[in-house]
Image 1 (cartoon, helix red, strand yellow):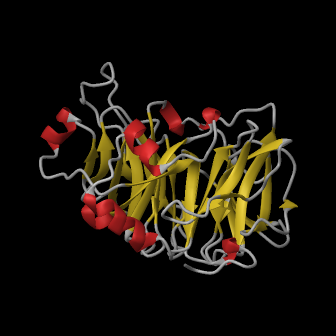
Image 2 (cartoon, rainbow, N blue to C red):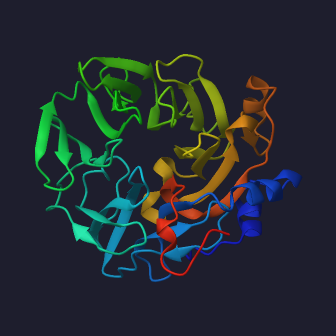
Length: 344
């Protein structure tokens, strides 16, 4: 499957309609840096791509037909990209992709590629706020590793955290998925200094990430009692205070699981993926990505009668359709543009 979907075809296939406000949203975000994501190429492997936030300028960043790349994460200054590379014969497993393959670092324009370790090294690695260290999570616990030397400078217990970890922009907290709060899929945070672990949200949650002010988080949640999808319901995108207060729907749609929520560097927009399949469907090259203003939330896609009954004030858009991708991230840096391209 090619990654070169048109906006119109995505709208027809996946329900994110081209409402009157979509063109305005597209114009609004076009010059706001770059989005990086993994996607399947026409040759069948998975590479890293970048595109403008309106979906324009998409191009293959890694172009490695003998391997697959995924889980890109920009450094805080946008100059570097951290990701994982797996053999061509292997599939990304969304429940363990942060430990698969080898960790790789490159400039965010795709240059200066460097493998950082052997198979399984630096599991679930994500950036520190200053970009000088990596937060890693293994069964034996958390570790903090210097990027330059690759030496661990600290280790501490994981306290039930098991995947999808990130460091708050203010440096005070860690966020991730945990199984130590009465449910196996909870979002929790840990104080970096004290090691105290606190619940943010429980029951069928995943893919959490921070708002840039470190005071709120975005995450996927499948609320109980939906009565749809054979009683299983559909995963939705939510936000809450970092302490779990005031949970609010961001985007939901009956017939689509919503994952990979990522807040723009200015805190004004949300980037996410939606698919009929579970876990963002990395085995098939990801799912259509989308972008919306957080000020427009809550939004509901499609007819979704049950969801609209529960959220009568929710609107239908605008939602900007983007190329098919998996685990997207966003930087306002112009480094990914590479030589010869400037901000539009």
